[in-house]
Image (tube, rainbow, N blue to C red):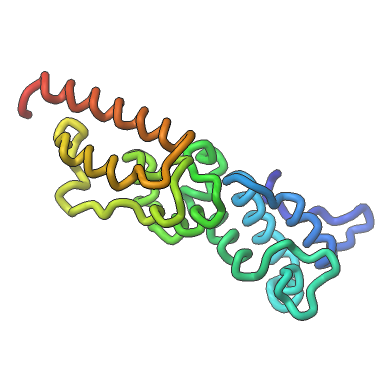
Length: 195
């Protein structure tokens, strides 16, 4: 999966909307990697068709859709392209850190790159993240630059309580790992004394 423009055939012919729909649909499936690649292919297909009405025909909700239209509508297509365009979420090397739901990724793609990066570092963006949690905790201005040693046990408890509802499997395991790491850094900070 490369996200490159659909190649011209051996006769130099550009692909049809039908061929592009099949090519984009081949990337569609579960998981963050599939969402990113589908978005990249949609962007490439849009460039190949130069936008406009022909591109719209790829989607299932178009009145004059192609025979092999995509298994989703244009709104989902827009959201997938937003995922692919986002500098952090659209980075294929980050897939293992991201939620697998394309809808959750679409919500995260609305956040500025710095906030997404901070969420990955802080651990509130993780593979088990649910869509309704995608905006994450709202950091206060003075909390954005605090070190792990300055985080109190009460703040960690609030994070856990806010994150646990609906969290299970890999997401819960990841949260536990992050909390153990944070607790370790807090203990080291307490041993060093005030700075």
